[in-house]
Image (cartoon, rainbow, N blue to C red; front, side):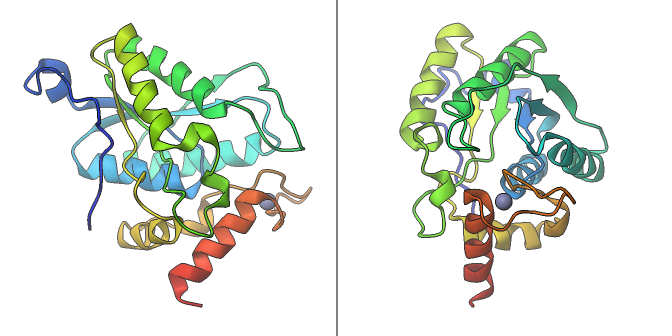
Length: 217
Ligand SMILES: [Zn+2]
């Protein structure tokens, strides 16, 4: 199993206490990518505080339940739930600059709680099925720039995106290898009234395409 860690801005002193501490936070959405990132980070020895954000997303309750199940099962703790004002929604289910908002919030928590490592589950957009990862604030360039900005605020903060070079279909393979129950993760943007995934939104299409690619269909 290979994992690429995004640390383009190297800490000045890799032996510094905050680098060695391995205390961190993970932005846990209840979806597959952040769950895989969480379990990978745990396997690397990180002590993680999972954070679930409510920001007006239609699937907040379902996502929150999935995040609770995943955090409890894999970390033995419940996620910290943070209620934010609603992020502007356009075109039904898109949240402009969502990652900038949420990672900034997580960084405040990370800094305040002396947990300098911040993990996000953003995966590679370099695959035909990864249409959902093509937002500007999912790009390596964005993460690199944000890392630099965060360190201007608190030099201890280190942003990790362990899946940034991993196509979505390979995330499914990782999930299987890590014994993650894919069915219990949730990533639909606009679920039906019975809480079933819609099958039509960008997240559902991306997930279905990646799953087909993973299965070689
Ligand atoms: Zn959907």
